[in-house]
Amino acid sequence: MNTSVIGLVVFFALASACGAVILAVRDICVRLGRRKRDGAPAPIRLRRLPRTASDDAARGPVEGFDRWFLLLIKEAGMAITATEAALLLVFCGVVVGSAMFVWNEHPVSALVGLLIGMTAALGYYMIRRTGRIRLLQDQLPTALDMLARGMQAGQSLDQAVELVGRRSPDPLAGEFRFCAKQLDMGLPLTVVMRSLVDRVRLFDVRIFTATLSVHRETGGNVAKVLERLAAVARDRLAYRRQLRAMTGAGRLSAMLIGAIGPLLFLYMFFFQPDYIRTMLESPLGQSLLIFSIVLETVGLIWTVRLLKPTY
Image (cartoon, rainbow, N blue to C red; front, side, top):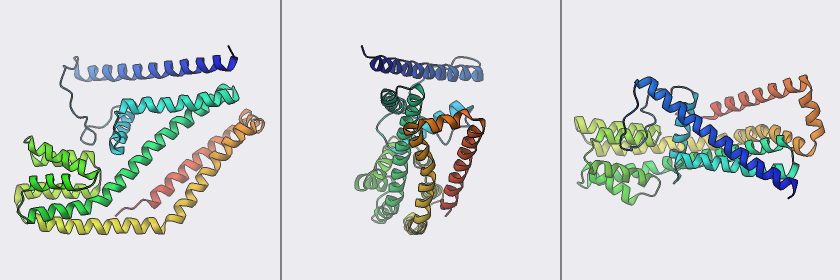
């Protein structure tokens, strides 16, 4: 058997074993932490939907990362669980790392390929979440108008929510259908609206849910309020689009500047390894590399915060 094939099989086995060990250690640590907090083993309960925003603060970095990843998969609207998404993340890393190892036959190249594959898959999740949230923002004003017209036509709030779930396009229609099913099961409106806020983390949705909750307790002309809320949501959407149009050149420049450094480093790493080896073996080169990574990360975070709308 060829040496490259043997090395590839060994790399697959080691990567799979490391992933299994990491997942097992994580589950054991989480269970031990829960037993220490509660003082006794947790009783067996029926499976329920996981909470996100309404939970307490995360206890430790592992639990914090688990909550962030679970929320990422939920907001991305993917038809897979968080465990399947994590396995897909590891699979992409193993595939890219194996290809790098076969091409270069160097362990460092395999490790770099593993990180690149996992980062690319994670970036796909984040891009999909951003697109879904943007689509929800675009669909919300029309859904509010439809809800207001339904109530003006004599329907109750529950019937209007069901109507929006049937007539609106996805993904917003799926959220309203879920709310309609919860209302049919007899859940209070405040609980249903709190669940909607946990699933769709938009400022306009928070205002909408607060409006319906106040209406259920105090009464009033909620149809008129929803029409005004739809107009405000359209104004906010127009402002965001205008901001994106005005800052398009700045965002493109920031993306190019941020991508030039890593791409140049990867090119030198794979095609000019002597230069990279000389830099990594020198203490001054290592210090400059770490300093450049820190500065670029701070600059990208600063640019994102400056271009983020606050209205």
